[in-house]
Length: 221
View 1 (cartoon, one colour):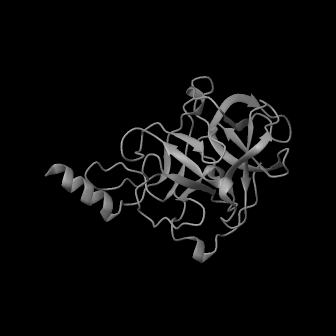
View 2: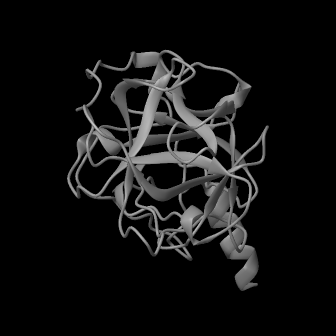
View 3: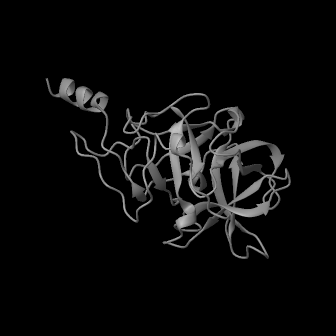
């Protein structure tokens, strides 16, 4: 089950490239910083293993599109674009700093990862949904990247903290019934735990910008 794919408008594609099965790694000093690009991300929660998040055509309690977790390793519906926060442009190749607010836009639907003060139906935590049209929603689409070091790097564990309500993007294993049987609820939790660590595993890494190269050069001097 999943939303009907629609092509993204040309002027929305400044921060993304076409979907491929594997990442292209950046070539630079440290060589592993994530940038504005495309990716899918499994969770690292010990109780449920590799879980990818996707948007599905089932409404949450708020009436917005559901965001769920699946363990499928080849679901094209789990690709999300990394973009700048609301009302900003993140140029392709710009490295993502730890502590930076971003948006995650679902590639197939153009909706943004979103949260608000609604209760999630299964766990009773805070609802996470997919919201907006053609990549445009509101300030509740912003998430802050929490990680160690200056940049979000590939293979590095990160948390996503909702910038407005401060909950952490999480999966704890609660599963939906029909019509999306077996898919896990994605929600926001107030407390940090192993259930809200994430890692970028597949997708496309863009070549980092000159900013990252310059910082690597100065560090060597």
